[in-house]
Amino acid sequence: MQVKKSDILMTALRLFIEQGYHATSIQDILDQTNISRGTFYKHFQTKGELFRDVLVYSEEKMYVERDQLLIGQDETNKDIFIRQLEVMMSYRIEKKVDALLMDALVSNDNEIIAFLKEIRQQWAYWFFTRMKQIYPEYRDYIADATIFLTGILHNANEINNVQIRPKPMIEICNYCFSLVDEVLPLLKHKRIRLFNIEDFEQSLLSIGQVDFPYNDLMLSTGNLKKLIEKLPANNDNKQHALDLLQFVQNEAMSENPRKAVISSCLKSLMNIKSIMHTDELVIYLNTLKKLGFYPVDPNP
Image (cartoon, rainbow, N blue to C red; front, side, top):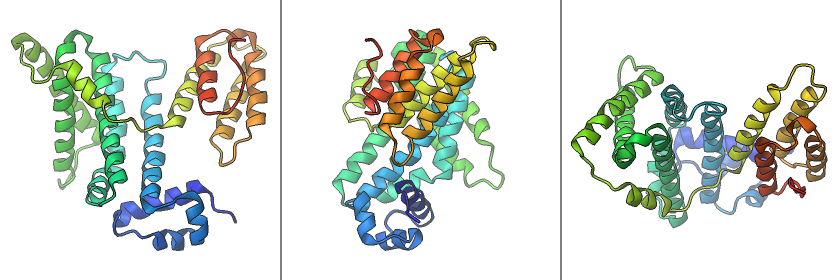
């Protein structure tokens, strides 16, 4: 049976979690996946490249779950944000992300070290962006609030992990966010600020962002699906459109996607009058275009 790249990534992730980055050898991965060294090097040039792909593969799944919570919701909804925090922090605990990052950081691989810095910056930038969305009235204090929230979340979880009866993750996230929610008005009232928001944002953008292409696909698919689901039940094309969406998603994320088949499905989707000129469809098509899955111009 042919082993897929995704199977290698999942096996490597499990071994990295169980044994750590340095203690896991390429031979360990070969033994667990029953592949040859030649097959391994067809997919990855080095163990460091494998580690990078493992983290991207793993984090993308978490990002999709996190961002789907916001689809069709008010971006200022604090309860949604707390649930997003729960997804992120639960992932970090389950996958032992912090321990893995620390283990890999002591390597002499400059590419891995740079990549891990990008990952951390990406996390910080997401927190910063969401805080700006939730608290536009406290814009000048968002940089400090971001540092405060990420810091207490990290430390609260470190302490919680060694408790005899650990608190549920949602309780930890709710507690930490509530503290920030209480502190922000005080910072503004007393004009207490450590970091300038423009400088802070520029520092986060100065390091390249890791690309998670399928996250955008999942989000644009989710938004278009919500639009289609709102069509009247007697709309003849409603179920057909939903079936096309599901098929394209499955095909695009498969090991060997058939671009011609995807293109054909998208042409059919574009001919459905009830969604033909919607923003959701244009964004969806442009996302697939960026991924190289079809040559159709959504605005002929």
